Image (cartoon, rainbow, N blue to C red; front, side, top):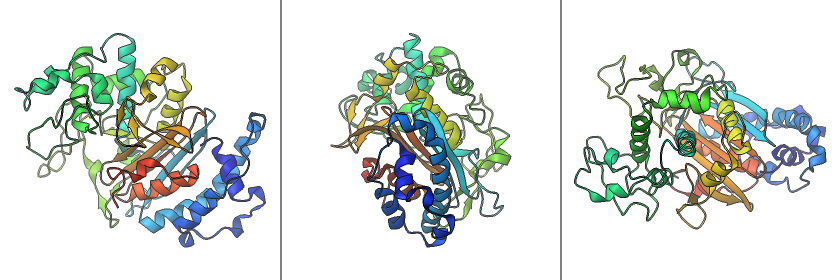
Length: 407
């Protein structure tokens, strides 16, 4: 992903391409977008050319404004927000489409979306900071928090540690069906098993050990430090005006954002009592994050920059992005992130899928570059795939994993 905008600029033929030479959004196919991006086999800028990068970013963003809506139209995605950072700076952030097909208010770079499983890398950051401060031990058994109520007679829960949870090797299901018992499928620490349930149990352990809620910990360790004023693990009243509505695969609105909850509550409150409380209706380290593309990009950028405001050291970053659990020949998991190589570059990534909100983040620590895409559609990951792979000029291994993108 090194020098994203130089690659994309070359693929459009530079600033000589006039706006009226571009195809109309409705006529663009995925193949056209990928072909344009893939044609960028030309020059990668040198560090001496960095000064001109912002103007190139502005030029390219004008062209992407015409390209991305075509991809959204192909997959029926009502709204999308994207942010790209490079060399430690956000180069471009933009919204496309609408927050709701009914109200038709446009999406902006500051529109709030459910970020779904993008919750996990941010929570992992908090856990590693607590470990650095010696408040928690990454290798201490957490059986006490996993035993109740389903695993009270299961001795293997004592093998589960924060490190094993963050690297997805607990042996627990992702999310069990309602009212079904939690089960351990294999000896913890021996193989990969993606589990949101395990993250929530770790959250409960962290809250008990620190005496603080996830809401307070996220503010103290991340949101306040980075001025992520619109980000939260729980619904805020302001979201009523600035959040995007979720849409199902046929484009119908799913009004998940009507839920209102107390930040310190362990039970949600609902305006519609007949409905079940959603899994992420209360602060949930695995799935309940609300954020904007720009703020989440700022978080990831600060993380891999070792930004002094975040106080996340290079030592912690190395610990986080070192492969620990192998998923397949292309993908491993570190502490909070999926890890792979794209065009020989180390790439950290995560996807989010709360059904009608789908998202993706991909970053290259070495070049301090990355992209965040948030959508309000059950078809959103198909859009993310084409946008992200178009920018990367290559296939991303994550999208070949069935759990991320089901064909």
